[in-house]
Amino acid sequence: MNGRGWWLVWLGLAPVIFAQEVPAPPRAWEYVIIHHSATSTGSAEMFAANHRARGMVNGLAYHFVIDNGSAGTADGHIETGPRWLKQLHGGHCRQADVNEKGIGICLVGDFTERQPTARQMDSLVVLIRGLQEQFNIPADRVLGHGDVVGEYSECPGRAFPWAELRRQLEVVGAPFWARPADSESSRPEGRAHEGERPVTR
Ligand SMILES: [Zn+2]
Image 1 (tube, protein in one colour):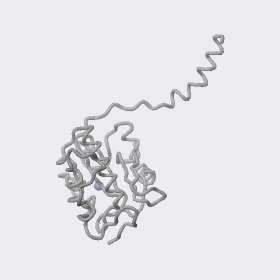
Image 2 (cartoon, rainbow, N blue to C red; image 1 turned 90 degrees about the horizontal axis):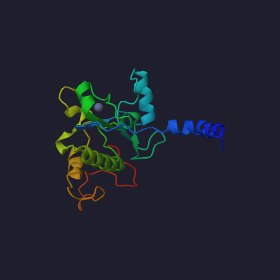
Image 3 (tube, helix red, strand yellow; image 1 turned 135 degrees about the vertical axis):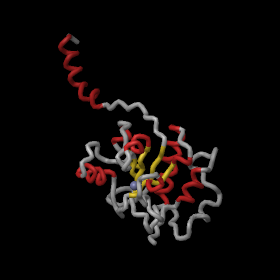
Image 4 (cartoon, rainbow, N blue to C red; image 1 turned 90 degrees about the vertical axis):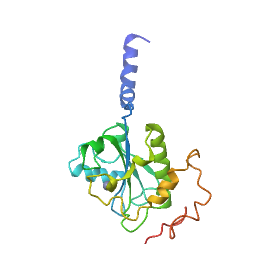
């Protein structure tokens, strides 16, 4: 192939090469901050549009969204936001330094009275354990939005099952998919098992 030929090959490949996003180097994350959307339905795309409309230039304020099967999503699906891919600070807390250090995870749903679906909780445990491992985040730095001093929020809702989450995160040494033997029976009453419709209370 002559020189011009190679140049044409290069031109043809250029869009492919430049389309590859280089993964951003990981930030030194110190906290995991859990939110609820406080809406019964939603998806990362819907929240991103909302956050943009509210003036957030980086769009979706959270790093991850865990779907509940509404708005065309799959129950328990983990959506990864652009801020995570770019390793940008979040926009999910009032305080800038918390946004700098905290990984924001939003579960779709309003947990003021209802609980997340079983699949959402399973995905949350998998996600948090992976993040804890990668960034060395101790369990006491996995917080609800409202646990952060100065945020003055009830997020992720009074019905969020903290005891169950803590128990799941404390299965030390077991692979993340292994559940304690009593897991099913000790779920709070009224909780849906996998494959069933979540109970609304
Ligand atoms: Zn929140």
